[in-house]
Length: 106
Image (cartoon, rainbow, N blue to C red; front, side, top):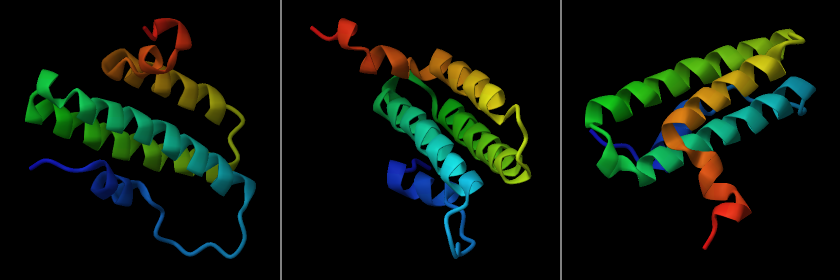
């Protein structure tokens, strides 16, 4: 079953109502957007991956975002390092950074 970026993004959205934006909410939203960019990039390359691989990456993204949200809410000092390493790992699959680097445009 294929998912659109919009339906996938609903899976990552925190359904709890927020009264005021807290620093951890802002940080969580930032990382969520970064991971969603990787998901969208993966979907643009769908023809290169099996449905099983797409489903596995989507499941990994959901687990990662749940953990990142926990780390942000708990105020862990190493959340930036963890998120950075995870984003770098996903970039190894999606190669998103190559899509956005001006030096790679023709």
